[in-house]
Length: 165
Image (cartoon, rainbow, N blue to C red; front, top):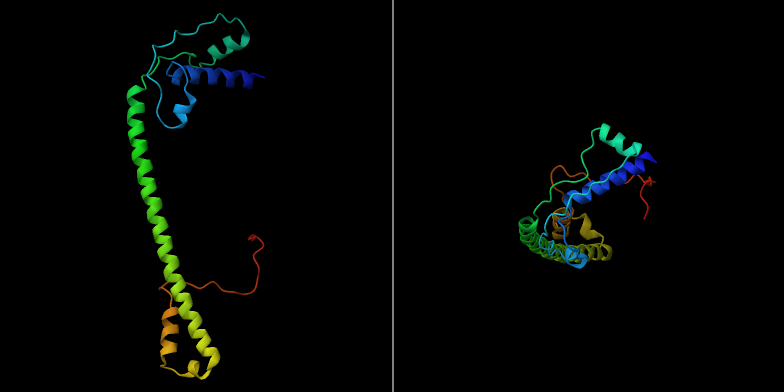
């Protein structure tokens, strides 16, 4: 019960400290338009509590529930411009990533087609794989080469129980 009361007191203090005053416009806040123009500071709320909880909170050294109102007009204007710039940068990066993914998929499909052609040729004529310096061997060497330090995972047939598909 005491924790609930303290939480409500903290919530009230937070509201008094950060609410700019004026009417709350939820639609404008969601669209990132910023807060409405700051209204005059609300009068501090005082109460004559005589309950033990209020006196106990004062003894514990909690801060008062009212604080001076902050002017958020300049901050919200700067935040809106910064937000718009960040959104533009994010959209540019998303377009770049999408383009890179299309390019990656394009070249992967080309390599896969070449691999299938080589496998088909080797299936038709198994003698092609036995020649040491044949064109097919050289292309397969290029296709299956890896970067230095890259290790192909060992396929020991054990199924990882953690992975679920």
